[in-house]
Length: 242
Image 1: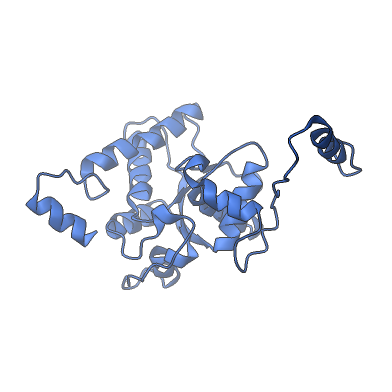
Image 2 (image 1 turned 90 degrees about the vertical axis):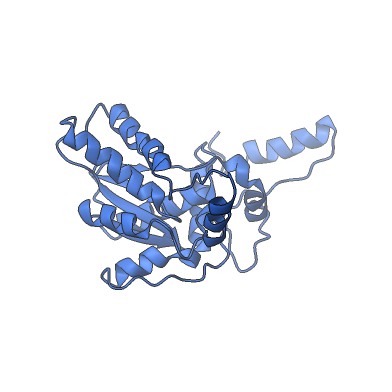
């Protein structure tokens, strides 16, 4: 990020990430759309994946603006979900918001939030404090399992959304999010951008990962009989719900 700032200072290249306030103005409209889709009934929780942390602040800004305009009477509690391999905000939160310490981000399947020194840290802390928000993290195995579980319902999500879903699962299991709470999980990308990670997961080719929800691909000869044999095996098995 420091390199990008130096480059855009010297060349006529437009800086479009969350350092740019116009980007945040665009991102905040997602919060407004959520309220519209809920017919202006405010959800109890909104969970957002966080890396550079512009998103969580933009959501707060959108919700707060609607409250100031009198469209709603409160804002949801915000949850910022981070990958455990790149979790400086989570560590900051767990330390009671004491002095922020950047980390060296490790490799994560949620590559867009693989950031150890987020540029919007102050904005994110402001948003979380003013929404009574919290921060949760997801290990690589947790986020990949959550992604596979979501995909099994017909969705096709990205690893970053898997991070947010892991936060939902953890907070629900711990009782922080109650059974009657309405919760929005923000999906930040489409699964087609991350097909290799899905292939590796379902092929059980990720080192040191159980891949508990894998649906392994099956190779079949390109003839009618072979295809029918496999389909009958799956469709007529005693565990089949068909």
